[in-house]
Length: 74
Image 1 (cartoon, rainbow, N blue to C red):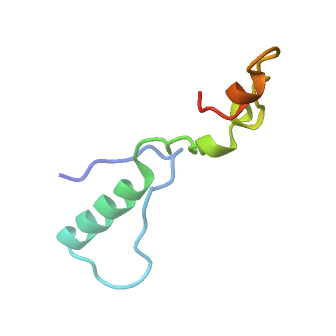
Image 2: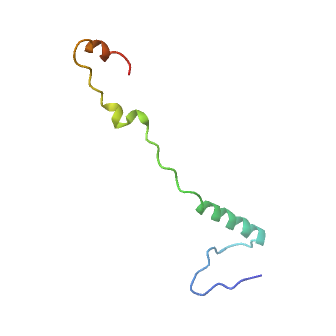
Image 3: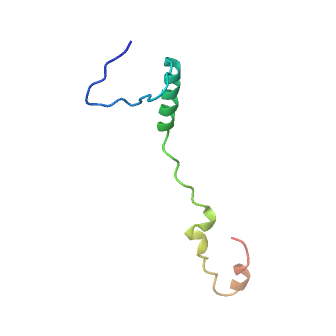
């Protein structure tokens, strides 16, 4: 079941010390492969309270009753 790798590419994983069984090597390869693959990180969420449109206040109504409408919620 061993497959020959081309000479141009070095092995992806090499056990330097110790005797690892085939199951241990398979578990190690699965963990290392799981660390590298995954979905892209989600974009950082910008809080709504710091949005530019919340920093600018709408102008108040001019004319009679304008002072009253400036204190009412919109």
